[in-house]
Length: 70
Image 1: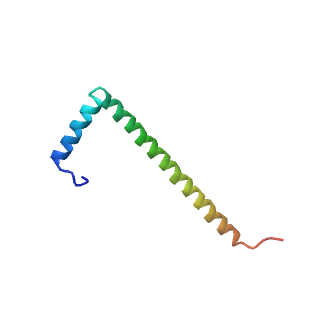
Image 2: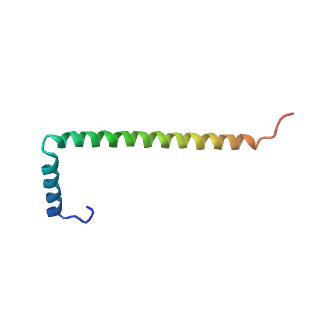
């Protein structure tokens, strides 16, 4: 994982614990989880909109090939 060994990860976790304290870490993780969830939701909505737009444009191009009545 990013070229970090077990010792480096333990040192980083210890520093985080010292800097933020045991009470603040769950709040930070909760906020991080909510942010990740919002990002996933927004990205899924964006993908859905792009698919809808591409389907609409392909439908319009198929309809434009038809001769005009008149």
